[in-house]
Image 1: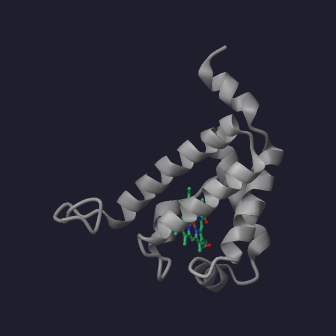
Image 2: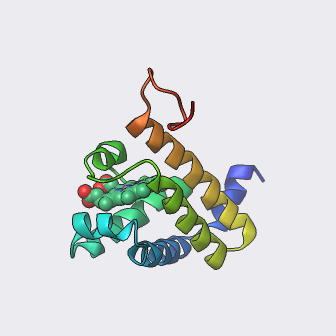
Length: 136
Ligand code: HEM
């Protein structure tokens, strides 16, 4: 069995929903992240969560359900500083560890790290500035 096929069988739509729900419980309780989400999402949590289920389903199960432009959308979010991505990842990692077995948690975690890095680069990288930001 190829690695890809094996990976897919480890992840289910139900796990994705549980993971997204748990992660957003943590986000909404976080003093740094919650104000940004509360300001942008307001009382539209239902549609946002649905979008995030679709996103993770597309990432983990290549379902193609998510159609959107995350870079553009995040660029428009006021107060989204680069340092907040570490907090975002920490909460995502906690959620994976609490909910999933080690192997499945690792699959989600590695994708999240890669996507976070490319989102950060797309949002903050400047050719004339050192990278990662804040170094030398
Ligand atoms: C500090 C880090 C982050 C913050 C504060 C943040 C905040 C937000 C907010 C407020 C929205 C709603 C935007 C809107 O509806 O106009 C959003 C959407 C979204 N976020 Fe993030 N985000 C962060 C990092 C990430 C990361 C690392 C990922 C992926 C691994 C991600 C994936 C998404 C996706 C897929 C959407 C839906 C975009 C769409 O409407 O198509 N976000 N984020």
